[in-house]
Image 1 (cartoon, rainbow, N blue to C red):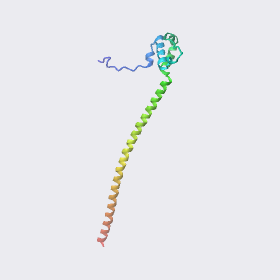
Image 2: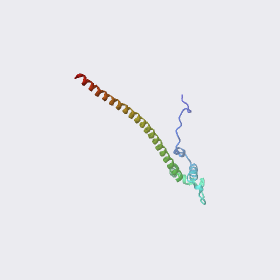
Image 3: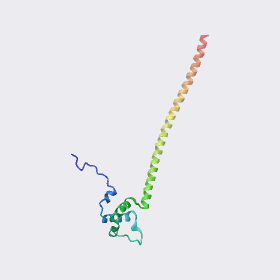
Image 4: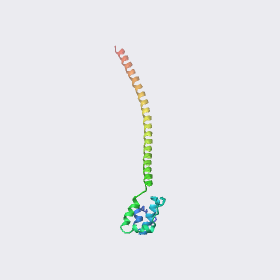
Length: 145
């Protein structure tokens, strides 16, 4: 019999966090987002709205709008960081592929050198056999006369 300890927990999305949030909780999420993500507390001379003040705009149908904003709107710094990470990942992938291609090139060049040596040996053998055939042909001509 399986216990709840054996069950795999599903990941929690932001929608799940906000699903049953009260206007005060949504206001707290909004306040945290404004301060931590958007950096509004760092603007001198700008007074940040309190959680209680924000709770007025997070009521009713506005809650869905704020859920969308909290899930999807990021600061310019966060966007640049994500873009940089994506470019870095792309460069790392490019470097990894380049290393694989260079290793493959090295292997193919090594095989090519081995094959060239084999061809030289075979050409020498063919030349020797041609010489033997010519000598044998000359000897057989002499004998038949």
